[in-house]
Structure formats: structure tokens, C-alpha cells
Image (tube, helix red, strand yellow):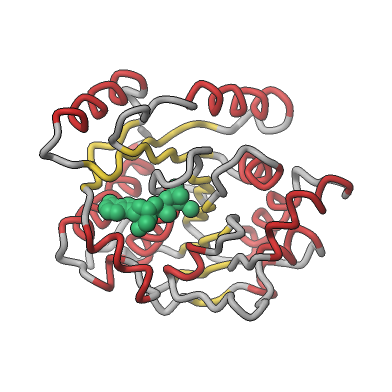
Length: 268
Ligand code: ADP
Ligand code: MG
């Protein structure tokens, strides 16, 4: 495992796209593991009530283990509930349970509802040695995702290489602009990752071209291929980096983690 450079300051990134099934969770967990294998200290925050990111890194979350819900609703500290993932060195995870599904509504009536995740993450990174925080967002632009927009400095958008790939991105950009104007002017859409690329189709190549045109600076060099191993890994409670590191998907995610880390120090 090649050691990766530490960023000058902790990078707090939300993995977001209001479309479901585009590879947000897969990207969040595999980049988190890849950065962990690179020797970096990573906090993965599962902000999706489905808890798929928690499962994928072997986080315990089925028996109402405390996690993101308690941090948001009870204002608990992340340090009280964080679990150490067996999937990679230095990978900490704040798990999501189904309770979090109710948080979307329960948060409506609480004070500082948009800033609760930010407060918790800022406290955690200022008291722990953390290089990366990756937040796996649910497929919506509700209050949970707004919490991620407020807590993050950077957004990472996975885009699936398929028809309609760019659909919905203007809505996403409007939401980002709104958050920038009102509450988090530092938020930056820094990274776009193309996922589930199928080299056999002309369509996938077209989508790559379109996305690079739309996000010339943000789109990563590395493209994640469609790979059965990537899809299988979560059912073993694993990331593809431990399940099948030598598969095309495993190598691509490792490369993507490296590219992400190198960009940060090159100041791109
Ligand atoms: P999201 O979090 O955006 O809803 P997921 O990461 O859960 O998306 O991915 C949706 C589905 O596609 C999952 O079943 C996942 O295993 C699968 N998948 C994601 N990336 C790949 C890939 N590169 N190759 C094959 N299957 C993938
Ligand atoms: Mg998901």
C-alpha cells in the first residue's frame, strides 16, 4: 500500500447526487477504504437511512446501534458512537440505522437543524487526527442532505455513465447555489467521478465526453468501470478493496483514492 500525502487541512466531502443508484455509496465506501489503505485517517459518515455504507464497511448497525441519528437528534458527539471499521486501517465509521428515516421529519422542528452535522464534524476533526471526512448522502435534497452541504467544504458527485446522466444536475446546482448564498459560502463542487462505465457501449463514451465538457476541471481522470465484483462486495460486508482488490473495480477505486489525495496537495 502506497502511502498517500496528507491534505494541508482535513477535507470534508459530501458524496451527493439526488438520483439513486448512481454509485454514491459504493464511491464513498471504496474511496474511504482506499484512503485508509494509503495511511490516511478517515471518518465515513453514513447519512442514508438505508445504512448501505455502514454495511459495506462492516459497521454494526442492525440492532439500533447509536450513530448518525443520535448525533443529529440528541446532539451526541461523534466520538461517543464512532466504530472502527475492520475493512481498512484508520477507517472510522458513524453508522446509520433506520431511525434516520424519521430524522428528516423530526429535524424540522428543532433549532439549528441545518448545522447539527457541521457542529459535530467540526468538533470531531478538531479533536482527532482526521484527514478525510466522507459523507454518504441519501438520494434526495432534504434536510439530511442540507446538513451535509453545510458540514462539507467539498462536494463529490458520482455520475453514472448512462442515458440521462446529466439530468437533474441543474437542480442539484441550484440547491448548491442556495446553500452557498445563505449558509456555506465555502462549499465547492470540487470532484466528479464517472461510475459504472461500460467500455462496450458508445453511449458510455458519449456520457464521459459530455460530463468532461460540463465539468472540465472537476471530473477525475480515473473512471470506475462496471464490475460485478464491486456489486458483490457489500453482501460480504466488504469493500471491493478487500473483497477483490485485483479486480478492475478494485484497481479503479484504489486509483481514484490516490488521484483524490494527490489533487489535494497539488492544489488543483
Ligand atoms: P447510490 O448510493 O447512489 O444509490 P450505490 O452505490 O448503492 O448507489 O450503487 C447502486 C447499485 O449499483 C448497487 O447495487 C451497487 O452495488 C451497484 N454498483 C455501484 N457501482 C458499481 C460498479 N462500478 N459496477 C457494478 N455495480 C455497481
Ligand atoms: Mg446510497
